[in-house]
Structure formats: structure tokens, C-alpha cells
Amino acid sequence: MIKYNLTCEHQHTFDSWFASSIEFERLRRKKIIQCIECNSNNINKSIMSPNISNLKKNNNENLKLQKNVKQKIVEYQKFIKENCKYVGDDFAQEARNIHYGKKETKGIYGKGTKEEIEELKDEGIETITVPWYDKTEN
Image 1 (cartoon, rainbow, N blue to C red):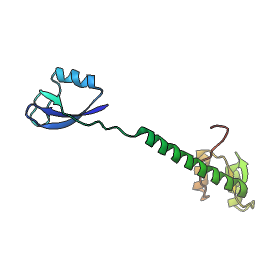
Image 2 (cartoon, rainbow, N blue to C red; image 1 turned 180 degrees about the horizontal axis):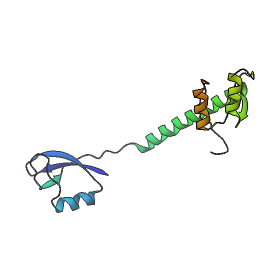
Image 3 (cartoon, rainbow, N blue to C red; image 1 turned 135 degrees about the horizontal axis):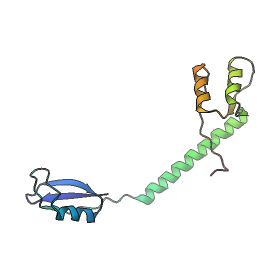
């Protein structure tokens, strides 16, 4: 998409978006573009400066942010692994056992489906979903 500043024969100015410069020229030749003030079909592009973003700077900032987020996730994972017991796919049942006093543990982590987590919530059992970075997948 490209945005042009346009001017009609009466010097009214307005902006409009086009799929390409070729598309603008095609629509202008067919007199499809109209001035928003006087409906004139005699339209020309005004002199305008291009809007060029600094893509390299934006990409570098995004990469830096992604790296920082990834590092925080790895730090949280390390803390969880050092301070909690991994229960795998049995997370929902183990959480119930702890909640209802059938088991004692300092904390658990594992896997649960959305439905299982919703059921735990309905029972008043608090859980938290933590993003997990798997080094084998990235």
C-alpha cells in the first residue's frame, strides 16, 4: 500500500491509499478518483516526502526484546525447577491432592489441558500458566 497526498484542479488537498503507484495512475486516467471537497476528477499527486522507517533499528530492537524475554523465561524456569516438583501430565490430579490435603509438597509444575485448568479454577484451586521455553524446539 502507498499513501499519496493529492490535489485537485481547484487546489483542494486530501490523502488517499492505493495498492501501488500503477494502480493510482490507472484510477486517475479512468477519472475514478474524486476530490473530497468539490468532486473534481482532475487529480494529481502532490510533492511529498517518503515515510521510510528505520527497519534495521526496529528489527534490532525487536531482537533485543525477544532475547530479554527469552532470558527471563529461562530464569523463571530455573527457579521453578529448583523449587518445585515436576509431575508431568498428572498436574491436575496432583494439584487436587495438595489442595484437599491428601499430599504435602512445596509446589508442583507440569502439564494440564485448558479444560483441566478450568476445572481446577471452578474448584477454587489456583494455578498459573507460565510460558515454557524448550531448548530442543528452538
